[in-house]
Length: 275
Image (cartoon, rainbow, N blue to C red; front, side, top):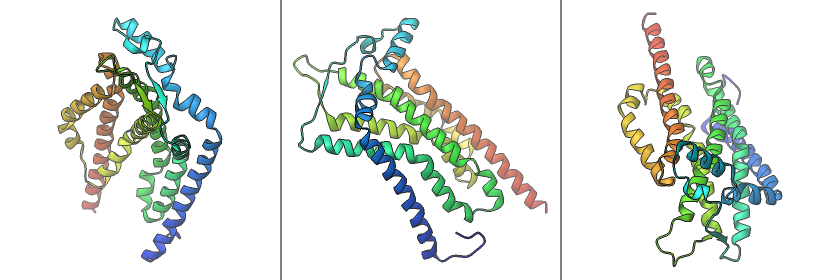
Protein backbone atom coordinates (compact mmCIF):
# COMPACT_ATOMS: atom_id res chain seq x y z
CA UNK A 1 0.00 0.00 0.00
CA UNK A 2 1.45 3.33 -0.98
CA UNK A 3 1.72 5.74 1.95
CA UNK A 4 -0.38 8.88 1.73
CA UNK A 5 -2.40 7.47 -1.17
CA UNK A 6 -6.15 6.99 -0.89
CA UNK A 7 -7.37 3.52 -1.82
CA UNK A 8 -10.80 2.08 -2.38
CA UNK A 9 -12.31 -0.54 -0.08
CA UNK A 10 -11.66 -3.23 -2.71
CA UNK A 11 -8.09 -1.99 -3.00
CA UNK A 12 -7.59 -2.50 0.75
CA UNK A 13 -9.11 -5.97 0.48
CA UNK A 14 -6.71 -6.84 -2.33
CA UNK A 15 -3.72 -5.70 -0.24
CA UNK A 16 -5.03 -7.66 2.76
CA UNK A 17 -5.53 -10.73 0.58
CA UNK A 18 -1.85 -10.83 -0.37
CA UNK A 19 -0.73 -10.37 3.23
CA UNK A 20 -2.95 -13.30 4.19
CA UNK A 21 -1.68 -15.37 1.26
CA UNK A 22 1.93 -14.87 2.35
CA UNK A 23 1.00 -15.66 5.97
CA UNK A 24 -0.72 -18.90 4.99
CA UNK A 25 2.21 -19.74 2.72
CA UNK A 26 4.56 -19.42 5.72
CA UNK A 27 2.29 -21.66 7.80
CA UNK A 28 2.14 -24.17 4.94
CA UNK A 29 5.93 -24.28 4.56
CA UNK A 30 6.52 -24.82 8.27
CA UNK A 31 3.68 -27.36 8.35
CA UNK A 32 5.47 -29.38 5.67
CA UNK A 33 8.72 -29.21 7.65
CA UNK A 34 6.89 -30.40 10.79
CA UNK A 35 5.11 -33.15 8.81
CA UNK A 36 8.47 -34.47 7.60
CA UNK A 37 9.85 -34.33 11.17
CA UNK A 38 7.31 -36.85 12.44
CA UNK A 39 9.62 -38.70 14.83
CA UNK A 40 10.81 -35.57 16.61
CA UNK A 41 7.39 -33.90 16.70
CA UNK A 42 5.58 -36.90 18.17
CA UNK A 43 8.14 -38.95 20.10
CA UNK A 44 9.97 -35.98 21.60
CA UNK A 45 7.46 -33.11 21.70
CA UNK A 46 3.93 -34.50 21.78
CA UNK A 47 4.62 -37.56 23.94
CA UNK A 48 7.26 -35.81 26.04
CA UNK A 49 4.77 -34.95 28.85
CA UNK A 50 3.74 -38.63 28.90
CA UNK A 51 7.26 -39.66 29.96
CA UNK A 52 7.61 -39.88 33.78
CA UNK A 53 11.17 -38.58 33.34
CA UNK A 54 9.95 -35.39 31.63
CA UNK A 55 11.80 -32.26 32.78
CA UNK A 56 8.73 -30.72 34.44
CA UNK A 57 7.97 -33.78 36.57
CA UNK A 58 11.55 -34.02 37.78
CA UNK A 59 11.66 -30.31 38.62
CA UNK A 60 8.32 -30.32 40.44
CA UNK A 61 9.16 -33.52 42.31
CA UNK A 62 12.39 -31.97 43.58
CA UNK A 63 10.60 -28.71 44.43
CA UNK A 64 7.79 -30.52 46.28
CA UNK A 65 10.32 -32.56 48.24
CA UNK A 66 12.29 -29.43 49.10
CA UNK A 67 9.15 -27.61 50.31
CA UNK A 68 7.92 -30.65 52.23
CA UNK A 69 4.87 -31.31 50.01
CA UNK A 70 3.74 -34.64 48.64
CA UNK A 71 4.86 -34.85 45.00
CA UNK A 72 2.11 -37.36 44.21
CA UNK A 73 2.07 -38.75 40.68
CA UNK A 74 4.95 -36.46 39.64
CA UNK A 75 7.31 -38.41 41.91
CA UNK A 76 5.77 -41.83 41.28
CA UNK A 77 7.91 -42.64 38.23
CA UNK A 78 4.94 -43.94 36.24
CA UNK A 79 2.09 -42.74 34.05
CA UNK A 80 -0.89 -45.05 34.57
CA UNK A 81 -2.39 -44.73 31.10
CA UNK A 82 -1.79 -45.67 27.48
CA UNK A 83 -2.62 -43.73 24.31
CA UNK A 84 -4.65 -45.56 21.70
CA UNK A 85 -5.87 -44.84 18.18
CA UNK A 86 -9.46 -46.00 17.61
CA UNK A 87 -10.20 -44.77 14.09
CA UNK A 88 -8.86 -45.84 10.70
CA UNK A 89 -7.49 -42.43 9.72
CA UNK A 90 -6.85 -41.28 13.29
CA UNK A 91 -3.06 -41.33 13.18
CA UNK A 92 -2.84 -39.66 9.78
CA UNK A 93 -5.36 -36.97 10.78
CA UNK A 94 -3.48 -36.35 14.02
CA UNK A 95 -0.24 -36.10 12.07
CA UNK A 96 -1.73 -33.42 9.82
CA UNK A 97 -3.29 -31.49 12.71
CA UNK A 98 -0.15 -31.49 14.87
CA UNK A 99 1.96 -30.44 11.88
CA UNK A 100 -0.38 -27.52 11.20
CA UNK A 101 -0.25 -26.36 14.84
CA UNK A 102 3.55 -26.58 14.83
CA UNK A 103 3.63 -24.64 11.55
CA UNK A 104 1.38 -21.92 12.98
CA UNK A 105 3.48 -21.55 16.15
CA UNK A 106 6.76 -21.26 14.23
CA UNK A 107 5.24 -18.90 11.65
CA UNK A 108 3.54 -16.66 14.25
CA UNK A 109 6.25 -13.92 14.24
CA UNK A 110 6.06 -13.72 10.45
CA UNK A 111 2.24 -13.58 10.56
CA UNK A 112 2.41 -10.69 13.02
CA UNK A 113 4.91 -8.93 10.75
CA UNK A 114 2.60 -9.29 7.75
CA UNK A 115 -0.34 -7.90 9.73
CA UNK A 116 1.84 -5.01 10.90
CA UNK A 117 2.85 -4.26 7.30
CA UNK A 118 -0.83 -4.10 6.35
CA UNK A 119 -1.79 -1.75 9.21
CA UNK A 120 1.31 0.46 9.20
CA UNK A 121 0.45 2.71 6.22
CA UNK A 122 -2.85 3.67 7.85
CA UNK A 123 -1.18 4.89 11.05
CA UNK A 124 0.11 8.36 11.78
CA UNK A 125 3.82 8.89 12.46
CA UNK A 126 3.14 9.19 16.19
CA UNK A 127 1.07 5.98 16.20
CA UNK A 128 3.86 4.14 14.41
CA UNK A 129 6.33 5.26 17.07
CA UNK A 130 4.03 3.83 19.75
CA UNK A 131 3.70 0.48 17.97
CA UNK A 132 7.17 -0.03 16.53
CA UNK A 133 7.97 -2.98 18.80
CA UNK A 134 4.59 -4.67 18.56
CA UNK A 135 5.81 -7.51 16.30
CA UNK A 136 8.80 -8.29 18.51
CA UNK A 137 6.98 -8.11 21.86
CA UNK A 138 3.86 -9.97 20.69
CA UNK A 139 6.05 -12.73 19.22
CA UNK A 140 8.15 -13.03 22.39
CA UNK A 141 5.05 -13.12 24.61
CA UNK A 142 3.40 -15.74 22.40
CA UNK A 143 6.45 -18.02 22.38
CA UNK A 144 6.91 -17.65 26.15
CA UNK A 145 3.21 -18.46 26.61
CA UNK A 146 3.49 -21.53 24.40
CA UNK A 147 6.52 -22.75 26.35
CA UNK A 148 4.75 -22.10 29.66
CA UNK A 149 1.70 -24.02 28.45
CA UNK A 150 3.81 -26.92 27.20
CA UNK A 151 6.23 -27.20 30.12
CA UNK A 152 3.86 -26.29 32.97
CA UNK A 153 0.13 -26.46 32.30
CA UNK A 154 0.08 -29.43 29.90
CA UNK A 155 2.23 -31.78 32.06
CA UNK A 156 0.28 -30.85 35.21
CA UNK A 157 -3.03 -31.42 33.42
CA UNK A 158 -1.90 -34.76 31.98
CA UNK A 159 -0.41 -35.94 35.28
CA UNK A 160 -3.64 -35.19 37.14
CA UNK A 161 -6.28 -36.20 34.60
CA UNK A 162 -4.52 -39.35 33.38
CA UNK A 163 -4.01 -40.66 36.92
CA UNK A 164 -7.46 -39.66 38.18
CA UNK A 165 -9.81 -42.60 38.67
CA UNK A 166 -13.26 -43.15 40.15
CA UNK A 167 -12.80 -46.91 40.44
CA UNK A 168 -10.01 -49.46 40.29
CA UNK A 169 -12.16 -51.33 37.76
CA UNK A 170 -11.59 -48.61 35.13
CA UNK A 171 -8.41 -48.42 33.08
CA UNK A 172 -7.29 -45.16 31.52
CA UNK A 173 -6.88 -45.82 27.80
CA UNK A 174 -6.72 -42.34 26.29
CA UNK A 175 -7.75 -41.77 22.69
CA UNK A 176 -5.00 -40.24 20.54
CA UNK A 177 -7.23 -37.38 19.40
CA UNK A 178 -8.16 -36.55 23.01
CA UNK A 179 -4.53 -36.56 24.14
CA UNK A 180 -3.38 -34.32 21.26
CA UNK A 181 -6.37 -32.01 21.78
CA UNK A 182 -5.35 -31.51 25.41
CA UNK A 183 -1.74 -30.69 24.50
CA UNK A 184 -2.60 -28.39 21.59
CA UNK A 185 -5.47 -26.56 23.30
CA UNK A 186 -3.52 -25.86 26.47
CA UNK A 187 -0.40 -24.80 24.58
CA UNK A 188 -2.12 -22.45 22.12
CA UNK A 189 -4.46 -21.03 24.76
CA UNK A 190 -1.49 -20.23 26.97
CA UNK A 191 0.27 -18.51 24.07
CA UNK A 192 -2.80 -16.34 23.43
CA UNK A 193 -3.28 -15.55 27.14
CA UNK A 194 0.27 -14.22 27.26
CA UNK A 195 -0.74 -11.66 24.63
CA UNK A 196 -2.72 -9.88 27.36
CA UNK A 197 -0.25 -6.96 27.74
CA UNK A 198 -0.40 -6.26 23.99
CA UNK A 199 -4.21 -6.34 23.99
CA UNK A 200 -4.35 -4.07 27.05
CA UNK A 201 -1.95 -1.63 25.39
CA UNK A 202 -4.16 -1.16 22.33
CA UNK A 203 -7.48 -1.15 24.25
CA UNK A 204 -6.10 1.57 26.52
CA UNK A 205 -4.75 3.48 23.54
CA UNK A 206 -8.20 3.67 21.93
CA UNK A 207 -9.87 4.51 25.26
CA UNK A 208 -11.79 1.27 25.82
CA UNK A 209 -9.82 0.30 28.93
CA UNK A 210 -8.34 2.19 31.87
CA UNK A 211 -5.98 1.13 34.68
CA UNK A 212 -8.73 1.95 37.20
CA UNK A 213 -11.02 -0.59 35.54
CA UNK A 214 -8.32 -3.24 35.76
CA UNK A 215 -7.60 -2.41 39.40
CA UNK A 216 -11.31 -2.60 40.26
CA UNK A 217 -11.54 -6.10 38.75
CA UNK A 218 -8.17 -7.26 40.12
CA UNK A 219 -9.68 -9.39 42.88
CA UNK A 220 -12.18 -10.98 40.51
CA UNK A 221 -9.39 -11.78 38.07
CA UNK A 222 -7.19 -13.31 40.75
CA UNK A 223 -10.04 -15.50 42.00
CA UNK A 224 -10.67 -16.63 38.41
CA UNK A 225 -6.99 -17.46 37.94
CA UNK A 226 -6.89 -19.48 41.17
CA UNK A 227 -10.04 -21.39 40.21
CA UNK A 228 -8.63 -22.14 36.77
CA UNK A 229 -5.33 -23.27 38.31
CA UNK A 230 -7.17 -25.54 40.73
CA UNK A 231 -9.04 -27.16 37.82
CA UNK A 232 -6.11 -27.81 35.49
CA UNK A 233 -3.47 -28.79 38.05
CA UNK A 234 -3.10 -31.63 40.57
CA UNK A 235 -4.73 -30.93 43.95
CA UNK A 236 -1.66 -29.55 45.68
CA UNK A 237 -0.76 -25.98 46.55
CA UNK A 238 2.67 -25.90 44.89
CA UNK A 239 1.31 -26.75 41.42
CA UNK A 240 -1.50 -24.21 41.69
CA UNK A 241 0.88 -21.46 42.77
CA UNK A 242 3.35 -22.23 39.95
CA UNK A 243 0.59 -21.86 37.34
CA UNK A 244 -1.05 -18.82 38.96
CA UNK A 245 2.02 -16.64 39.52
CA UNK A 246 2.93 -15.98 35.83
CA UNK A 247 -0.68 -15.15 34.93
CA UNK A 248 -1.08 -12.83 37.92
CA UNK A 249 2.23 -11.20 37.00
CA UNK A 250 0.96 -10.62 33.45
CA UNK A 251 -2.18 -8.99 34.84
CA UNK A 252 -0.15 -6.67 37.07
CA UNK A 253 2.18 -5.86 34.18
CA UNK A 254 -0.87 -5.06 32.05
CA UNK A 255 -2.12 -2.61 34.71
CA UNK A 256 1.25 -0.85 34.62
CA UNK A 257 1.14 -0.71 30.80
CA UNK A 258 -2.42 0.61 30.86
CA UNK A 259 -1.43 3.31 33.38
CA UNK A 260 1.56 4.32 31.25
CA UNK A 261 -0.52 4.58 28.07
CA UNK A 262 -3.27 6.43 29.94
CA UNK A 263 -0.77 9.05 31.15
CA UNK A 264 0.53 9.48 27.62
CA UNK A 265 -3.02 9.92 26.32
CA UNK A 266 -3.77 12.61 28.92
CA UNK A 267 -0.56 14.49 28.12
CA UNK A 268 -1.43 14.48 24.42
CA UNK A 269 -4.94 15.75 25.15
CA UNK A 270 -3.57 18.53 27.36
CA UNK A 271 -1.01 19.58 24.75
CA UNK A 272 -3.72 19.70 22.09
CA UNK A 273 -6.09 21.72 24.32
CA UNK A 274 -3.38 24.32 25.10
CA UNK A 275 -2.65 24.98 21.45
